[in-house]
Length: 344
Image 1 (spheres, rainbow, N blue to C red):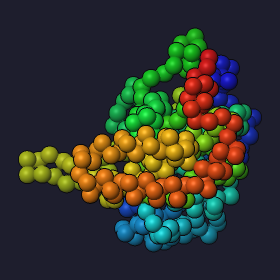
Image 2: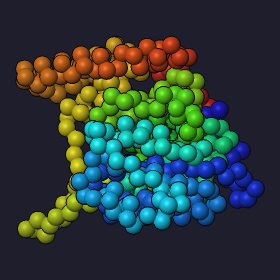
Image 3: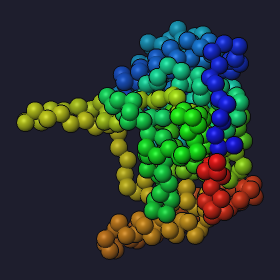
Image 4: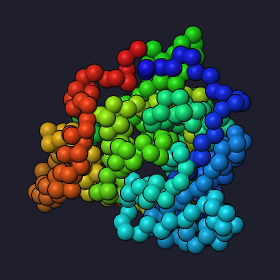
């Protein structure tokens, strides 16, 4: 069912499952408060029971200490848990740690630098209650107008096993001038919602992921391979800080922004190859591997590093690849040929 042509977001007489808001943070205090209070006001407005699980992933700005002090009363009553995950830098593995601690029926994985339009989370939750599956919403950047809404990803699997943010809306998703919830292949994870039991049923994020990237394509495509669906709630909007909170002014008066954390190309490449291998097998791994090799511009030391990385990916992902193959209803190539998210 690629589009729900009869969707109406209920204003009363609706189920209210408990929601676990899982926020991973790395040196994002105090903008983190925007994510916490924006989602709290939205969920309390509609009457949902809510808890916050904040996972500090190698924070060096005292974020977990500050939260444990300032939100100590929330912690006492069970509204917030603060988890220190310092084993390695990995947003997706940190999300696994948050999901392990969560007690809600619904998981909302939220970035630490987003805000929500009223009605967004309510619509996503009610959509999940009706259809299950994974739920996204539209996104734009802080300061942009709502006319700049982005609707999921255009796939770029052949290039980097990822996707590009897109303004594209399939024609069949619009009914009598209105957009109703419809299925998509994948989207970004600034805010993504799903059932807690279903998240663990598909195995969560891969524990081998490094700092950044790979998790979006990995989880979404695994969802589809297992016969599940990924949905977009187009009436909602998550606003995303795309610049960062580390601000400096140059001599000419220009402001520059940046994150207080970083990732390396090696981590990025490893994650993309790991997602390609576990989801698509060695043929897909080779496509991504060759694309990365082309970026090395023939420098032998870089090429050797990528080759070693490729071998490590196979070792890290072999067991998961076997589990996915044993459970998938179609192969990745068959999935991309059928495009079940794009059938009106």
